[in-house]
Image: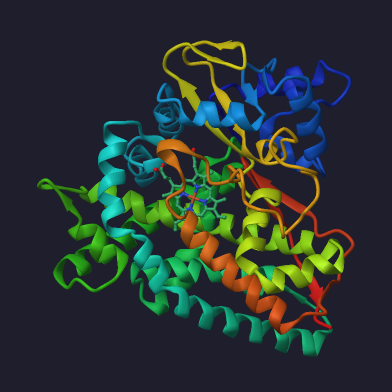
Length: 421
Ligand code: HEM
């Protein structure tokens, strides 16, 4: 096992053992998998103290207003988290170089500079232009699922539809050749454990190896695009310029890996977590979602949050909800808990796809690190939800329990087996 954390895992485990009753503050956030439903724990903690310090040393923020305050505060940084990740990786490895430049783990002024340059290339217009392509892809994948269901009586939408779609979309966006798309999806999966807290040695080694291969691949792609630019995002990122400044080679490499890593499982889980909840809800909800998949997607974003928490490290003392958070005391902002704060959402534990999206859910965070791919993710899921419900209005779940997988803050279904009629 390769175990490390910005707060020691052993401390977390010891503090969990020392308390007889499982409560939220003694729950190691990396062990969400052991809890079949963390929402009751979130609700209890939020009601007791929306900002509270766990015995492990983590500050846990579970209220909406408090989460918003931390995320918007310029004293909240992510650079020290990036530094801890880097320390755990071998010197000179591709993973260490790449993580050193990850846009979500750097602070201003570097972050402001990189984000400004990326914003010139990754525009809302570029996402809108993908709409038709995504719709055609969704139809093709759903047709594959239908063929399987016709033969087998049911189909697992996770591997057949939800998993491939976001990865293929990122590849298309970046202009990665069709023949290489499966490889990049595989490498993204293999590198994911490098951001885990307690990683089996084999997965760690595989992750490091995949990271080298990923870097090598992107290196070749960058060289090709620099020679012969296309109208894809990668060419636009290479060309992006602001006052004579451009993204460096390492920054470009890191961005490509980050786009795959940040945009794949999250988008997949938004669709599957949300659809599973919809299939459990009263039938009128399904009809409403079919009528307005855009609004339904927004409710999925709130109710079926794929990224349960984000980390912040304040560099100066910060007061939130009357609690004094000291410099460098790590903070976990529980977006999933904030999204169900009864002080901001009526009947928050109920999926209601007709709900007005006000206030906005925090699933894509807020402030300087607000998710760069939020509109892409929303577009993909809206198209997929609409196409799925139009095609199979009578679909139903074929499993009592789909099971959950978690990795760090990410939480998604293990499968989504459905019958189509
Ligand atoms: C449902 C799908 C998604 C969810 C729930 C999600 C969630 C998030 C969250 C919570 C953050 C903030 C992290 C932090 O503050 O520490 C973030 C940042 C980011 N996301 Fe997403 N994301 C999704 C899809 C995507 C997609 C499709 C892409 C790109 C193709 C993407 C690219 C990024 C990038 C590059 C950042 C870092 C932005 C920065 O630090 O300036 N995400 N995402």
